Amino acid sequence: MNFIDLYLIITASIGFNIVFVYSSILSPIRDFIESKSEFLGTLTSCPMCFGFWSGLAFGFYFGLNPFLLGFSTSFMSWIASNLVAFLSSGSSLCEQIEYMNAVEKRELFTEGEDYE
Image 1 (cartoon, rainbow, N blue to C red):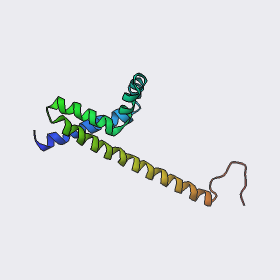
Image 2: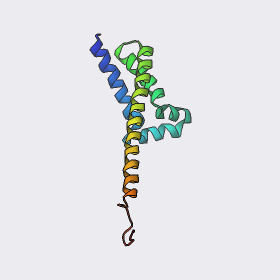
Image 3: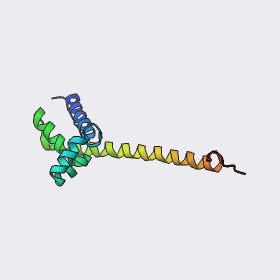
Image 4: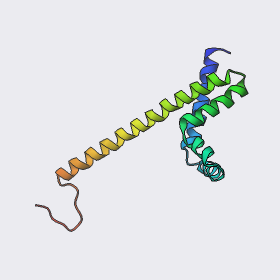
């Protein structure tokens, strides 16, 4: 197995992890798992935890070192989820700054109220 194959397997595992942990389309499955076991519900809602187990499964399936793939997938999933959270918080900050500027310019008002 060459480097490109390993890269594609790790990327696929991370993609599967992000889709499973964060997507709304798979939330019924996560809710079902959480209803059966609080511990497993915690594991399926944490990108690092689920990343390790999905990497382990991908490692066994593709005949790679499962622990190496599990730890690398867990780490890369953590990086990906933090990057998404960072970009999301930056977007929220921009919206707050835009709102504060509009309030200062008195562009936001309730209909029927006059401002001086």
